[in-house]
Length: 172
Image (cartoon, rainbow, N blue to C red):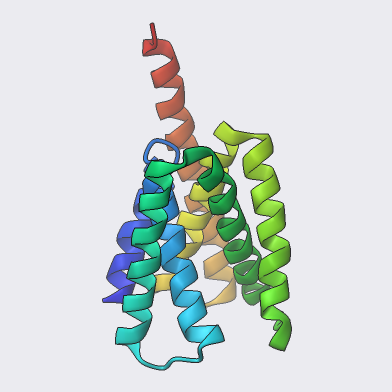
């Protein structure tokens, strides 16, 4: 069940992360909830992981709708942390008991990027997050994962930039 949710969320991020900002925040909230439940709470229960992830995703989506500017930075933080942890895993680097510090460093980088270049951050972070979510949900094998992440990321950015450009052309 978690794999299906991750595939749907990853596809949404990959293609509509900028347009549906709340979806980006909800999906990153879901991934962060799953991260906390599995790694920090050391839960082996798929049901508990799913419940915590869904609650975190719903809270993220609600916050995104209420306080967009603050949530952009928060989503950048969560995406940056998620991405840095997953990049290290992909490279087979295990930070051990300091994975929270790796998440924090990635989060600070992501929040800063989201704050400085808002529109591009809302294209790049969701596309990269979506590519990672989809890939880690279904693939296992270093070379295949790297290729899939790069291809999905490029496709996601192309789709979202195309949508953004179309919006700008149609704006009054």
